[in-house]
Length: 275
Image 1 (cartoon, one colour):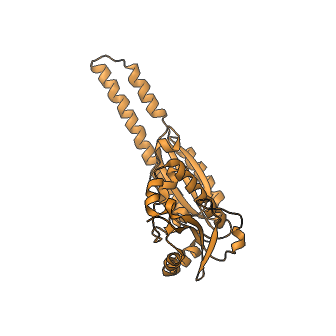
Image 2 (cartoon, one colour):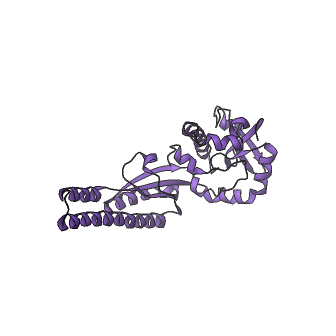
Image 3 (tube, one colour):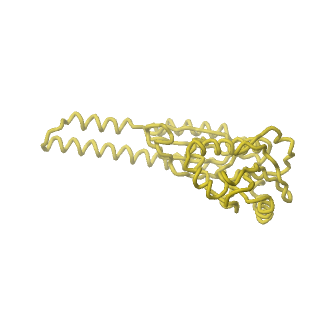
């Protein structure tokens, strides 16, 4: 489908006055608008379907520069709404053909949306990423090099020892990541474990072994930060990174909003939106 104007849905909230969105632009650069549906408020931006229709989205989402601009604009609107009260972020590239389709979709799921907003009131998402420190692997590489390049039983023995040391380091990192996630999930109200990001996206040479999201009430954030620091000291083979607070992307429960395209938050990660 091409031509005409569609609606990009950023977030669902309630009790939001339109003037609170004055001056804010969304994906595509148009001013943000609000659409009331029963007790809910949809925060949207009109978009040109020649660029944001289904076929165009599948093409454009492969362009990292385009994707980064779209994802950052999407996040900017979501964060602005969330700062004003509980909000349900939608997945990147949720586009409706027109306002009647948007209204019908929200009306059909109004009970679930209202329950999710109640559940996420005064809640924030925090992210914890763990990367495996490469000290053991580097030691293994040094040991292998010191064995020399010749043939013989001694070289093979040292090479096997180096490989074993590297595997042991990877196993220790994996077990540490499991323990860290279990401890953080036990402290948080809810937890999600996302796929680790590739080194080409993180820009960090160490491999990521944990990409966790944790839902916390406002009063528990300081304690969570202390726990992350304690775990970092307890598992020195891991480098832990705490980010947040973020809108509750991982806990909104809007996996299928019924729009034209529902590409998902993985695209936002690829575009460099940090959470």
